[in-house]
Amino acid sequence: MTAIVASDLRRRFGDNEAVAGIDLDVPVGEIYGFLGPNGAGKSTTVKMLCTLLRPSSGTATVAGYDVLKQAGDVRLRIGVALQDSSIDGRQTGREMLELQGQLYGLSTADRKRRMDDVIGLVDIGNAIDDRVESYSGGMKRRLDLGMALIHRPEVLFLDEPTTGLDPASRTAVWAEVRRLNAEGGVTIFLTTQYLEEADELADRVGIIADGRIEAEGTPTALKQSVGKDLIVAAVEGDAAAVAPVLQAVDGVDEIEIHGNELSLATASGSRVIAGVAVALDGCGVPVQSLTLRTPTLDDVFLHVTGSHLEPGHVPSDDDIDEVA
Image (cartoon, rainbow, N blue to C red; front, side):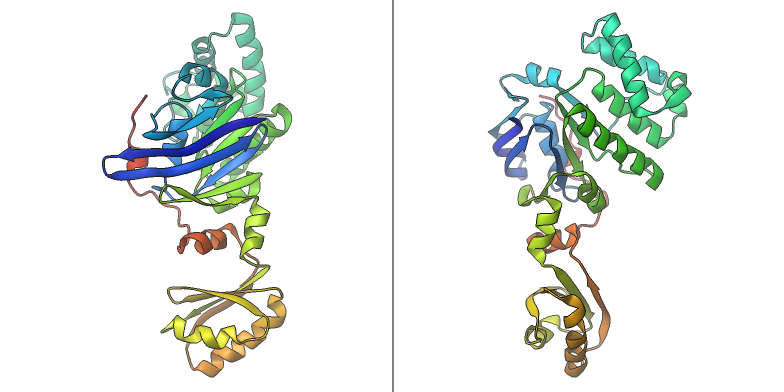
């Protein structure tokens, strides 16, 4: 069964096409990581799938319902925790969960049962009866997650759930996401700009840049597509002039050039790196650094887009709110 389907999904803001024809097919029970920098179209895509933003063209269904024609049915079956929290700091955590249950039409008995379940799940402890304004950033994120879960959604959308959190809080949110998926079978659509988050949590990853999905697959398969090992050389001067010499080194399968950096794919980095060092020395080109490592998702991003993924907020159309 499929939880999320999108076909040629697009969204324009004036002359800017923030989402430029996305296709998605996310099975029930999968954690799908949507990886890309700010401004790539991640949040715009999520808002369309959550019925908060009308697509300019294309189609999408979530939990079997069309996001345009059956928006109400979609909203009843999804949970959403966006970057901009809707939590009222003057309320207690319990009051916010109670209100969310009422908004979804849960009976008093159902709300009580779900409150007990959710409070245990998000691990806020006795602070559940404190005002939200006293919560740490990590506690607010976990409460936001609890509010998104109060009605037992089939599909959970998490839009950069750990942005701005300290490492301990980020790890706690990761644990909650894994548990929700493993124990509750919830399909999770997770947008992130953190490479380690996508690598750690996602069954599959879609890499988005400039409104398009540039690569998709399991984290392992995507990294293997770059090469088993990578030798990365940063040089002073013209990297392109060095490339032919390095290509001739035995064991070098492929070379990519990005600025002053050369990435060499090889099946045996430990065997080849000495030859690369000798070849660089023979070229007379100053070497800033020479490293050997296995590929990361950042290498995949660099491979498919030509640039590194560097998290950081850049104002974009993703910041524009428009409710359908």
